[in-house]
Amino acid sequence: MPNQVQIGNTDLRVNPIGLGANAIGGHNLYPGLNEQANKELIKAAIKEGLDFVDTAFSYGMGRSEELVGEAIREIGKRHEIIIATKGAQRFIGEEKHIDNSPDFLRETVDASLKRLQTDYIDLFYIHYPDENTPKYEAIGTLKELKDAGKIRAIGVSNFSPEQLREANQDGYVDVIQGHYNLFHRDAEQDYFPYTIQHGISFVPYFPFASGLLAGKYTKETQFNDFRANMPHLKGQAFEQNLEKVDQLRQIANRKQAEVSQVVLAWYLAQEAIDTVIPGAKKTEQVLNNLSALEINLTAQEMNEIDQIFTSD
Image 1 (cartoon, one colour):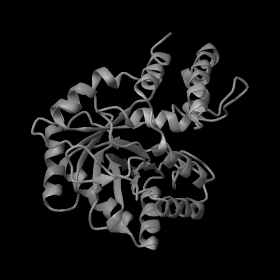
Image 2 (cartoon, rainbow, N blue to C red):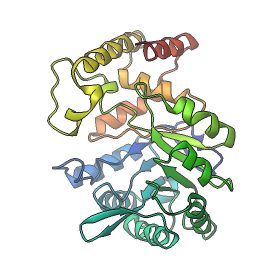
Image 3 (tube, one colour):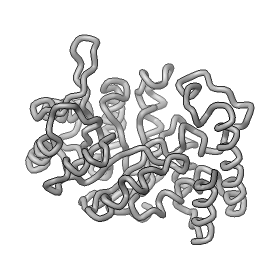
Image 4 (cartoon, rainbow, N blue to C red):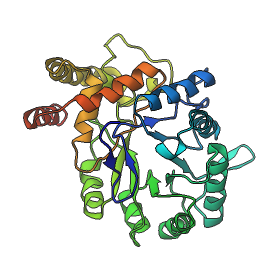
């Protein structure tokens, strides 16, 4: 088992490289997924030392949670695996509504427990803030669920800095999950000072910038899915971004590593970040991500990467 890290001030300890499970049963996000292959990926990852799986109700409207629960039950290591999930989406007919009300959060946690086939969730996030519920009231409900043993740690996702402060007025927030990568570094000013001061762990999503920081794209790459409308993957911006990735590749080559591994190592060297949760569709991708733990970046390399991604 690799060296584990503590997530913020919680009692959760994990391999720093986790698995983002949006491609596990996330049929609404990735059509044509093979569910048996999804489960085998989780099992293979766990056998290789991964022990942190991050899912959500919105990944397949509960299907990801079900597959994660099935895979962990079949491998028989629930007590060794840290499961994070998220909820806030209420459906009225076909319409989706964001709901952080106490009653709905209790329903949501109970439903996730059932889908995951477990009697506790290690880390539960409010996936999105709603417009009406006071943030401290929503978090107070999760604190009650934590005291009852249904969840072990409290998280929020997609909360603005102001909403995070309101949510944490009683000091109950353990983790925030937010948008952060080398191309999108606003969190360094907007969140990191506060989270570091209050012992809240920051978990980045989109760590590879929709694949760009995995180092596999070229100027000829074309997208026929949701990525086709992303500004950083279009036109001149795409070409400029590829040039930055090529500069990063030079550092990776010197270290006999993949671009993606250097990227993950850079994140894990940030004081605000304890763990990263890159997604994967193939077992090889998970193994490649886990190998990032073998990468040690020097202070000079850290600064070199910082300069590449702060220059215009």
